[in-house]
Length: 401
Image (cartoon, rainbow, N blue to C red; front, side):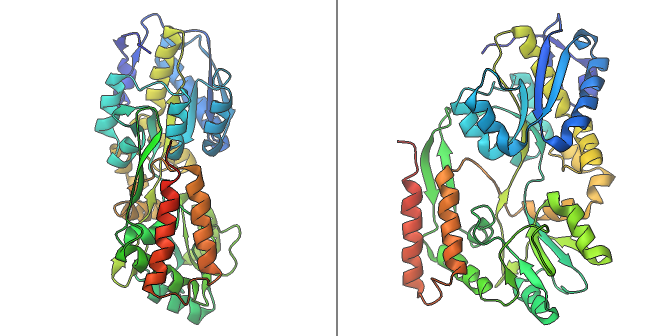
């Protein structure tokens, strides 16, 4: 949908984000969906935006709680009734584009997004050659939390397991999750990605799971499952007696409470000399297509503001969300954050989580369940290769027909 060209918003430029908006402004209604924890913060930022831009002072903005994980389903169910701006996770991008629920980012704003945000987040908001959303965070990945009175060497998995076993502590890793499972497969050198066309259809799979590297990863997971310290899981809410856990920034408060003065975090460990990898994840802000060009200009301007350097840093200070903006990432506060520092170290070994078919997650759960149930313990390399060939063939069957 063609946008109205507009004047440069000077205050937004000071915030590190230029937005094109309609010259006459907009004074109608606008609705935003964000995570419940971000509702009050977003309301405050909307008022700051309106104060900085008198042409939008009369705009009536409603902020409602809809989590990033639920946004796509709600938007797709009824695009017309959905919010005008909504936060969502990167794995929902293709579904939203296919449903016609996302406006392409205004070209001028897209150039600024590319220049000011890290490469992973820029890739995450891009489908084909088009950008469809504004990056908000680069903090949806996983790393290692550990009790430093228990774990003496967080850099090696065998050493971590030995320390946990000796102390009678548990090592938590969610083996039956397609998200966490990639730590082993990608770390061993495997690939599993899906390519989409500009309409969001899954048109090609790139996979090397059925390979020597895949067998190496599968054997490492089987070995982990045999440790007396191993527990399947990734949350402090269900962990009992943890010595270490693979988890994310959303659990940093719980980690601090669990480990107290012994709280520590690091990138994922190595396994037999190779580094565990995995997915990096991102939160983003989308704009729904609009019939009213003035309203569309307001949506673009507000989305640019809410994803700017200063607002990302303010969001970190208020909520602990890790910025995607590269200048915000270099702030003293972010650099001093133990969990975010560990994540930043780990992200160099990850790939952005792109678009995966829904069936993939169930298939991966089954693979992990079979490992935990010891179904593969007695298989030789050829048998394990057959398991991975079946996995790969099944995944390929999920492509858009």
